[in-house]
Length: 396
Ligand code: FEO
Image (cartoon, rainbow, N blue to C red; front, side, top):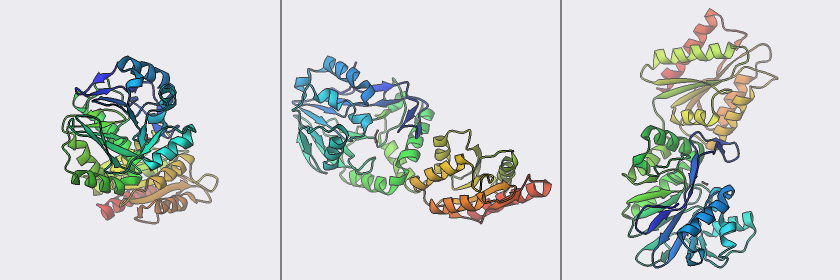
């Protein structure tokens, strides 16, 4: 069943309670997700976005309960990624001539994915579509989250259909931001930003400022994942402006992997040293081989500085730290401090390699790092403690 959100707009998406991972296995999902699709009924009927393909038949079948498909005048594809375009083939098989509004990149990407020559109408920022009492205005939003992404603004109801932007992987029957658990919502929204949108932060700032300059009245932001921002929708816009501005809190995070606990002992002593030097900072200690990788990224996103540690094995570091370095390289964090540490038995390359990786990923290295041969004794623990304190003193 659809859920009426205004006289003209009905939510016709799919809540995916079972989802455990997204983007393959790159993004862990703890509280499900949703693929939000919206049906606008004015003088013309418009469908905005669809759902992921495992739910395509269910989506089309339920949509038929809402409207005779032949009465849909336009389909708008704000973004061609499969989680939103996955039901297009099933839908357009029944209404093959319906105009499909998307950006020029969107048309290329849909053709590349579905190999169909649908009735594409390509649009640019400022193009409009009159649908009766309301007008739809298109706003290109490249890289939020793919080159094809766009927003659609509906006058009258004053709704911004933002697709991925302002979304969360968060399943809730409540649908609206003011009806959900605020801690869960904040946690999922920041995880989503940190893990998906961080590399595009400069574009986020630019796009939000551009949209704000239009002075459009805004009653709701209808995203494509998670809640509809109905109560104070500007709150998530302001959060995005903060998060996009090289966000950091007074937090230092120590992340390590360990084989026989020597590097763990180093990590714990380093954390104590940080706490002693920066008592007003939050200090977090995470073992990257057992913690969720996306939660670690969220903690890095919140941090002013990080310390990454691993012992040397086979002339390199352990794979969980290697994988994390790949992730932070892609996410392009800025203005964050870092240092490496780790124990070793003979060759001892890990600290140098981690330092190189951190530098390549754009972190500001505070030191050459700390290597310790075998298991730290009392003197070694003191050296780690001092290393942590020195790190904190340099960045706080
Ligand atoms: Fe929710 Fe970029 O797709």
